[in-house]
Image (cartoon, rainbow, N blue to C red; front, side, top):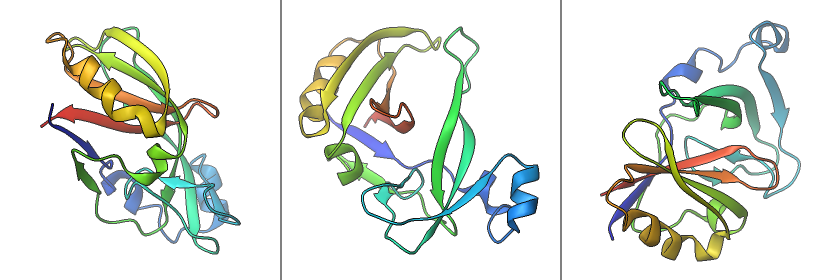
Length: 155
C-alpha cells in the first residue's frame, strides 16, 4: 500500500512569524523557545525542532469537515517554517518515536476505524486501515498529549 504523509501548509502561519509576544497573545498564539529535543514537533516540516529555536503554539483546524468529527487543536509550528515536508512510503521520525492514536475517515468525514500504536509499528496499521476501500485518509495524533501530528493519504 502506497501512502504519503505531508506537513501542513505554512501559509496561515506566515503572518505570525516575527510578531511581538503581545501581538501573538492577541491572536491566542504563544511563542516558545525549545529547551530539549524531542519536545516540539513542527507540523509543517514534520521534524522535532532543535533546542534554541522558536516555535509557535497555535490552534489549527486539522479536521475542517462537515461532520460531528470536525476538530481543531493546538499544534507547534517552527517560526519561519516555509516548506511542507513530504514523506512517501516512510514514517517521519517525530511519528516513529511516539505513541500514536490513528483514526480512519471516509469521504464524508466520518470515522470508520481507530487504533493506538507505537510509532515504529505505524506502517502495518496504515496498510490495514487503507485495506478498507471506504477509508479516504488517516489522521495521526500523539496519544499522550493528544495533538494532531499528521494526515496520511493514499499515494
